[in-house]
Amino acid sequence: MRVWGMIALTPNGIWTHSHNHHHNHNSKLKVPPFGSFPVMTAERYLQATRQERFFYEINRHPITILCGYFTAFVFGMCIAPFFEKHRKHQDCLAALLVHAAIYTVLGLIFGLQAMFFAWFLPQFFAGALGAYLFYAQHNFPTVTYLDRDGWTYEGAALQSSSYCKMGPLMNYFTANIGYHHIHHLNSKIPFYRLPEVYRSMPELQTPKTTSLKFKDISSCLSLHVWDPAQQRMISRREMYALAA
Image (cartoon, rainbow, N blue to C red; front, side, top):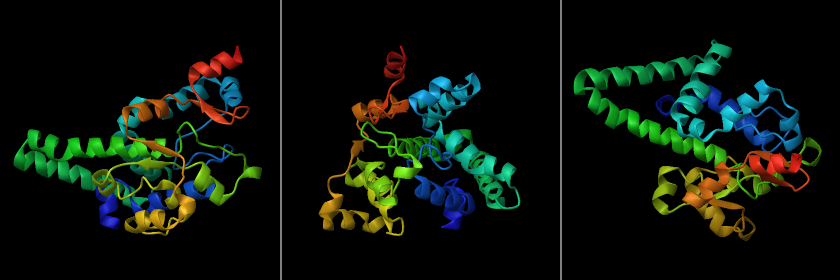
């Protein structure tokens, strides 16, 4: 799995750290969003500096998510951690070198066209899907965000994590990560047993849901900030209408 982590641009060291931080602080508004997408309240966004707004917009922009192979994985999971703590995250450099070697070998032996279609395109598509799932599983219309005082681990799992409805094929390709509310409730459950847990526990069968349908993707991507008064995520248009 350590080798696979390098191939998938999720080196074990930074993945474990970011994953554990995310699970322990899921939906906390006042904790730095390490391992997830940033979320501001409407008031905080309107009071933010131009630079803060810029980086917030860039991080949540659909193009950033579409280019997740570069933004979330090459940079976020490999380059940034290595330059921040290069001794601790040497496996991040190893992952980049593994990818560079694969590109080089495929290009020299089979040509640029084979390299593009056999390696880059699948990696780009998987990166985009992975980045979107990271986003949509905690940025969907019925999500709930909490301050530290009202936060509980099980509450964040069931109220701030979605169940992404997918068919058997996509569940297979995504290792059942659509059962995200169960994964957050207990991350030690193996991915291949998540459907079994879902079927056997009625309490987990009425989660907040989303899907990979165009309508649901559009709804998730339109969300911009959290409005505490309405207790829901709102779009940029709604935010400015409230401010006016």
